[in-house]
Image (cartoon, rainbow, N blue to C red; front, top):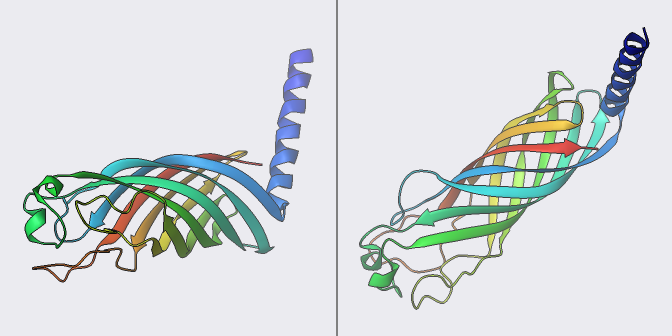
Length: 202
């Protein structure tokens, strides 16, 4: 009987906590997970490479079914140049062919949260502003191979369970992040990525 009573109390407290959490106007949390990213541009290997992201977020509920979410995210992805990269761009050497490069960004997504029939599942869309915090002088004699800033678009889904959150989103870069001149190609360098994350909401 005691065990049954204790189980009932636990279930009741969980239900109350869940309702209060859903009705809360302002919530905070932390998150992290995997990045599948690539740099889309001439001279780089095609295909997504594994990285990671870590950060924190704040959610503000404005009206029923709609709110906004701001995040501060450290995101790390990898890319690799192709053979013959030195023949495409100025200021690089043969040592830059097949070179592995890490791109680390400090990003600020500003997202709209739109409930999809339930407060548990949200559609997230909005812009993301990123600052490159890794070395920009990674290619031979090039002064700065990459520009320091990036503007992207974000779209994805957010599943809010009690305490735990799960997210999946697609990030596409809007601006050219290439900082060196091209010899034979006029293509832009634009980041793309898939982020799969899990976190805790307070």
